Length: 348
Image: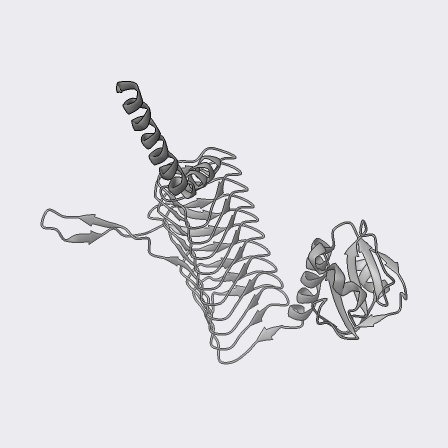
């Protein structure tokens, strides 16, 4: 598809500088873009490329003051990065909207229902009483168990497995290989050292505007629901245990693990490979640094790091002191030598 600078500016409420009829057919990084491509500049580190890029149209911040003439047509916006993301989203929506219908072979229960403009990819399975909302796209090899509900405008990528009774809201994206609603890790220890499985009869509820990365697992609740609240963003390879609640607009990076019954507030940021024990509360707006091991609750707005995790600022001070330990040891030895000399002089 081909778009002019004028059309793109209307999409993102931008102002055109240059030829409004300049056209683009694809996207490119500013340092590599060719004629007919659209690029953007948000990071000042890449400003040098705007003066030599071959891109036909570039989205830039309205505050950027150019040092040299630019051959490309510019579109100025308050935030170039956000505008470019918005544009990519619209482009992706246009591409996926073209998908519609039910490919074959597909197993679809007679009691399953779908809304308008739905796409069901080949080799997918829709169980009893499954509901799929309007404009949702279920890509090949996906599994929707009995009584699963998927809302409007969702994208379920290839190989996603959603177990029975789980609920997915509107505008949710779930990437390939993710498993929603597998059993929580619940086993009762016995006197003889063996373990008896505790049945997991709850479900998973994913609210609106959530995105879940590839190969993430979200366990169903023992009783009640494991909940991912609206606007949360989960990276690839994350483990969410039974009865966890992830607050709205919280972001969790790859390879993190959240143990059972932990409650995470809204707007929390969790770095990659962080681990959180069960039955704790992470307050709104808290920040957990990558590879942190969280063993107790964290208050709202707090930032922690390390294993066990503790206050981020204190941890930085400790690290600075640790780096200076060799020098401090040398100074202590010098002081001890000086004290010994002073004592000898005093005695003599």
